[in-house]
Image 1 (tube, helix red, strand yellow):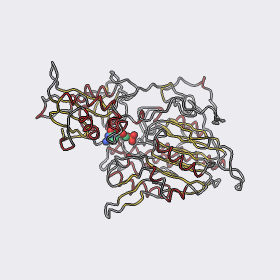
Image 2 (cartoon, helix red, strand yellow):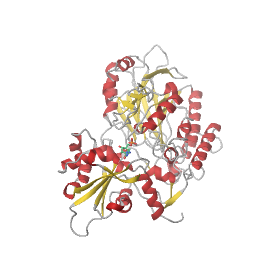
Image 3 (cartoon, rainbow, N blue to C red):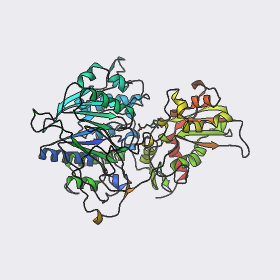
Image 4 (tube, protein in one colour):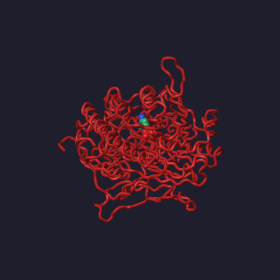
Length: 583
Ligand SMILES: Nc1ccn([C@@H]2O[C@H](COP(=O)(O)O)[C@@H](O)[C@H]2O)c(=O)n1
């Protein structure tokens, strides 16, 4: 872990189950390669990950079984290590590539900006060569305008030790917010293509679908159905992401999907037995058994799972990566303190509105101060932001450059429509928060506005009780002798509630609105006649139809820049003025 990071913390652990074929999975790391410096249960860094995967590959080799390392996208945006450099990702791409990944695909965050799409195509794809798969994504070459596959459409290969034959795909969900140098082909359309139809007729031992797709979104189900139509008996595993949650979904007794959280808090572990019979000639027809674990990026747990310790765990390579991160963090001055957070503010561990809610802080304290311009400072205004634009909690203590990007990594700026009749403008916030249907008519999904974690909830009654899911190696070591529990995830998925490698004190999460609003410079009595309606540029597509529905006919041409500067910049400025002091 990084110098100054919180020390790893002891906790009661559940063992990992090894099978014939095993997977290590990361997703939505969003640049958190330095680890969570303030949280002991997630303070391992990418160097530790490099050491961990090395030891686990070695164990697989020693046992004569196989291990594959997977990443399902959104490696960028969300942490100073990526966002604070000019250009962005100056250090991040090289550091990430120190990890040896067997199957890797693209997420939506690699595609929001033409620049990051360019880097993905020209840095990460060549770094991973045949391991990079882009089943439904094309890149547009800037020099020629030619549309080319971002990477190969699928990959057929055999595992190193047992020669298990795998056909692997790499999808992204039906994303529409991509920059114009990429083309995302809708998943359902892609499945009709000749190459896909050929690939699913290959008859491997196992299909592996890696996708930047939430497990409860439609896309994986559609892919599952297409593969199953051709192959009633071949096992399929899916590795998803995007929803920022730990989750496992069972499509049928031979098809299992897992998602491994967010921000390098989680390393996913999946194992399968019975995927290939000992004799090559006989097809494995009985149901394979699957198991999953969500490993906290706590060095204590990584030592535990590898059977190593402080001295034996770090490999030379891992140590070098840790040192490279330290140097990069230093040269980006990520520990520079803008101020000192007087208390912890939560995204979803507090209700909105409440004194501990980060959104209440933004609406009540930050926006009234920052959303202003000299020539219209007395104009009453409504300022709206989507909650999804805020990405992480603020912990009491130093608020650094790094914290700034973890909270607000995006380049979104402030726009407005001047002098909107208040009667209409005042209705916008409720429409954004609770009138999803109205926006659907305009092809807009209001779930995009909110936190990824609550966008695709896991259905409550999910487990199919009639089917057995094997968890034969579960062993809980000495829970009673271990220290008290630390707060963390208690994941409920299609298999049960024992997936987390660490037994945590359960955290309660509260649903948040899609958007929050501040009323600024309002008259003391009564309502204003008109207001300036100020909003972050990301939510403009929802603002215009909302106003229309509220009775005010505006178009994109009526929208102007409200002030210079991004939310990220303005927030950091606010903190340096208002949270002065030592900590
Ligand atoms: N400029 C932006 C870009 C994105 N968002 C929010 O992030 C969500 C996507 O994040 P994932 O990690 O789930 O891919 C998106 O739906 C928005 O809520 C934003 O606010 N501004």
